[in-house]
Every structure is written in C-alpha cells, then in structure tokens.
Image (cartoon, rainbow, N blue to C red; front, side, top):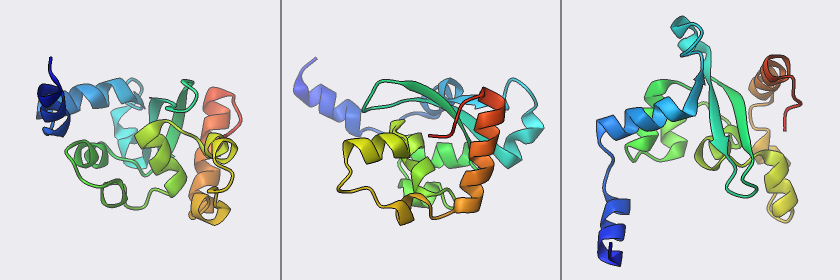
Length: 136
C-alpha cells in the first residue's frame, strides 16, 4: 500500500459498522452485565499510548452516543461534554493522569485534570471496588 492510500484511509470517516466494532472492543461494562446501566456510565478498556499498559476504567456519564459522535469525527470536547479532561484523555489515548504527569511534568496542570473532582471521586471509587485497584 502506498503512502497516498494510507493517508486517504486515515482521513476517511469510518463506516457505522466500523464504529460499532470499535465500540464493541472498547466498552466492557455494562454490556455484559446489565444494559440498563448504560445511563450511568461505561467501563472502557484502553491501551496507553505511552506505556502500552492496558487498563479498564469506569467513566461516569459516558454514553455510547458520545463514543459514536467522537469516532465519527466530532471533537472530544464536544462529543464528551460533561466528561473531565482526565477521562477524555484516557478515552482517546489510554493515558492516565499519573502517566501524563510522569512523562510531561512541565505540562501537568492539576486544575485541568481535576476539573470535575466529585465525578472523578465516584469513578475512582467504582474502579477501586470493581477492579480492586487504586485510581491512577
């Protein structure tokens, strides 16, 4: 495949089927437990672009429609309205706030990462209880 085809494929919008396949790979909870829980948030699995570590995190307020909008080309700030910057970054890149702060300490802004502290506390508590791991 030549560079023109690679660029063309990268710039083309994904089909609805491709979006649904990506969502199916990303969303862990509650699709396998109780679909009525979708209204509260989703657990998603992402691989960190910095470390390669795979993590699953509950993102309160995240909906399937938000993921569809983002994957169809909407900016993350618009598609993920109400989701704080830390979780938007995790959804897009798999990078946690702790990884970001370690890799780029000069750009780490605690106020930006904690812009919705109450939501973050709830999500971190869920992650700790459900996955028996500390919130990173």
